[in-house]
Image 1 (cartoon, rainbow, N blue to C red):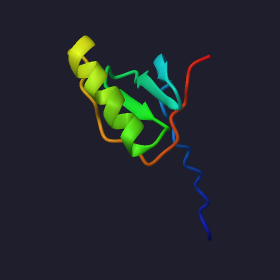
Image 2: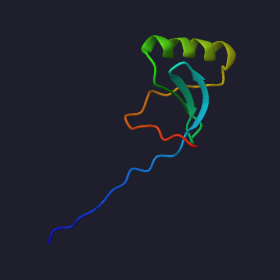
Image 3: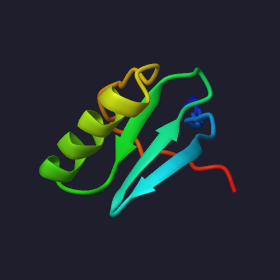
Image 4: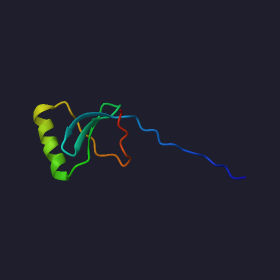
Length: 71
């Protein structure tokens, strides 16, 4: 007898905090922040900006799965 199981990956929605060109700053449901999209240089510029103007933002490394954005 063969058992079939279906596993779905449930990801919590994220909220877009700001757009910086092609880079999106998103806050995940668990309170962590992530930069999505853009080039490495553009993400570095956004990190620098956040360091000056939004020091409360702590970044996580990009996830392997696509970020689900809240509408």
